[in-house]
Image (cartoon, rainbow, N blue to C red; front, side, top):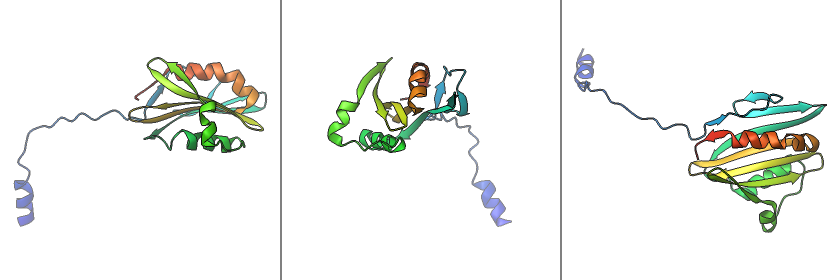
Length: 156
C-alpha cells in the first residue's frame, strides 16, 4: 500500500513533452533502380544476365568507415586482387563531383571480378556505393549504377 502511494505521488507532471527525433543518418532513398536489377534489400541488388552475376550495394558506416586504404584493400581482397600500398592509393582514386558532393571513385580489377566504387565522406559518416561482379556485366551496368548513385537521396 505504501509503494502504491509513493508511485502515485511521484508522477505529478501532467505536461506534454514534444521531442524531435533526428532522422536516421544511414537512411538512403534510391529513386532510380534499373528494372533488370533484382532487389535483395533496401540498398542491395543482384544483377544476372547470360549466366553472369554482379551485385550493387549501398552501405553507410559511422565515422570514416576505416578509411580509404582499408576499404580499398578490403575490396581488392573481395575480387582476388593484390593489396594496394598506401603510396599507390592516390593514383587509384578520382574525385567525382555529383551535385553538392564530391566522391572518391575507384575502378578495381581482379582475375575474375571487377569493382566500380564511389566513396563519400559526409559529416555523419561514410557512404560506400559499390558495383561488383563479372567484368563484362559491371561494364554493361556502370551507367545504370551511376544513375542509381545520382538519384540517391541521403544525409551526409
